[in-house]
Image 1 (cartoon, rainbow, N blue to C red):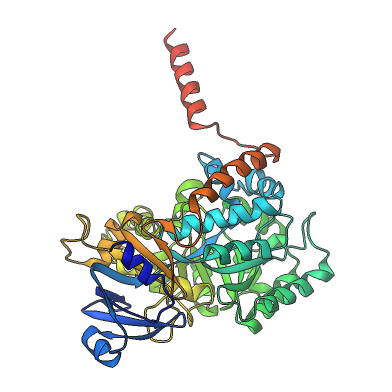
Image 2: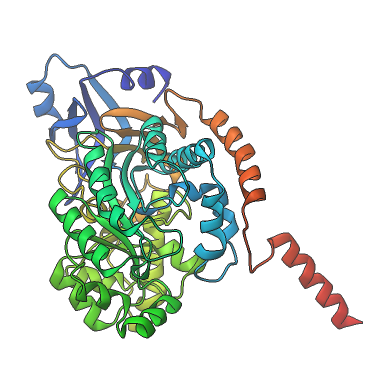
Length: 471
């Protein structure tokens, strides 16, 4: 595809796109096409049928390309992008030492820029939806909404409803703020409100129950970090005599409206609770590898019908690498010990990266699938490459061999948002330059405590110890 193709695709539409194949839930459909109008898929079917039905539309032929649903990031922290590399080498629960002080150092401009930078990275990696778990920056959450809109990405936007910690909102005001947040974005084409509690112990039982009720009534989700680290599980046992997920069940917070982030440390009983209540999970495999205590039993979740999507946790915004990590983590954590060389057969992780993720974050009726009436959130992927051209099993190959460089175009709500890694309609490089300036200032004034030195310092320390040993 060339510049003239880009200019045409960036036009107002409607569009008739004819790629080599369209990725449907049941697999790739060769020779199919889509029509797009008013931000949605108007029709999906065999190309010859759509061309006959829409003779007024010039067919845009896309040889060597696959049209597939955009990735859904089921767990992100958009305003933490300035400190992504600060997590490297750190032990678990770094939110206390890194993320809380970093977000606390952000003003309105830096919070907006951090969120837009995260959105840019996500779009470059093929994500058309990001789920923000709520910012601790002392700014109006609409700053994050504006950044998402301006970047052109769909956003499930959390409002933090903590009321059991020192810096919490006054308890009587939490429910009122939650109600206003859920109503604030009614009808917004890209921003979908959500509620959030950092961890179960950060909110009173009353608020845990109330936010669950409000979200259920609004068709939204409540995001809570659940059973992520051993320290959190033990604190809950000491405080409540129950594990975090069990505590949420006791107060009536489990259900289809709950999006449990991480859920890496689950007992068989807790898996049953998730399945029986319809609670959704964000499986974050890269976060487990970088700073976790365990890997969520995602293959067991899939087998038991537990709803779950894939989340980055702000680690890296690359949809293909996320899907590959989801399979890879299951293979290492569970498959090797049991002789399971399939671990989901590839398609499981591709599906959870789009359709399953959309369902988990409350948008299953809106996005995540290429189907008539659904939002036109999709990717055009170059499959005429050394990695994918000799295809025998495209879904599994996308999981194991797909990469961000093969994404030619990203569409959100029917509009071209990214073209070969560059945003359409705004200056990505300038944003990156400004983000670098603001990030240095924010990190300098934040009271961040790292337990691990930088890689350069660690290398120097190792060399110094080696020299001391040889003397």
